[in-house]
Length: 323
Ligand SMILES: [Mn+2]
Image 1 (cartoon, rainbow, N blue to C red):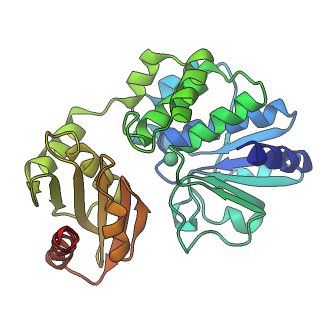
Image 2: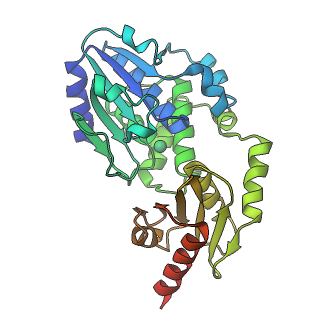
Image 3: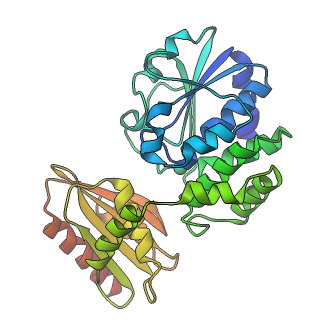
């Protein structure tokens, strides 16, 4: 990652101001990475702005405002109406996303020079005309990258920002399981040394009882395809996050080594989220269905098909793999 950090250093030195933007419905990874990067940029003596609609944050995370209040560091947020006030030669840094449609505000890459730092599987529809794009889908989270960047710069981040970064790593790895390497644990250790607060982190990771019950109902309707592979069908318009969370949850059950969750993500698209504990390569199946991913973490989206057809396709592929 040293080459990446040198490159970002060089680029930062070329600009006066920076707008850091993550994806819609920001999660702890994108927030932590955004906040951490803003603090780092200020350390360079430059102006950093986090593109974030602070009023809507509570919708996503009930305790996030509490975290913002505890922060010693003043982070300046901008939104669709206020970003025009940013002065000087300005660079847009996109974190935890690389598709226009996923961005908090899709117009910005057309307005500013742009760089992207992400860890999602690269999609063909990635934002074009960027100055620089770093995508490593083997990495647990953008929070991990930003933690190492701060360490590389010998910079101790604000302890609340360190807490959010730690929560970001935890959420993206499904509690240090997915894509977790020794570097991921080291990043967690660096953040703890910076003063990450384990109590605040637990508050940030909490879900509501309603969310839990909703997921439990999905799980209730899941079934085994064979002795070690589970499937869940969500029979309502859902989103990729819900599919992923359900697939991850299924891995907690005894005997389950891989899981597939499918559901409609819009009127004519079926999303499939596949997970494994690491010994079954779910990406093989997702690739055959036009998707992609890694051994333990993969997905596909299929247009103009019914749930029934997609379900059959997955089961047939699993059975043909066995032969
Ligand atoms: Mn992420």
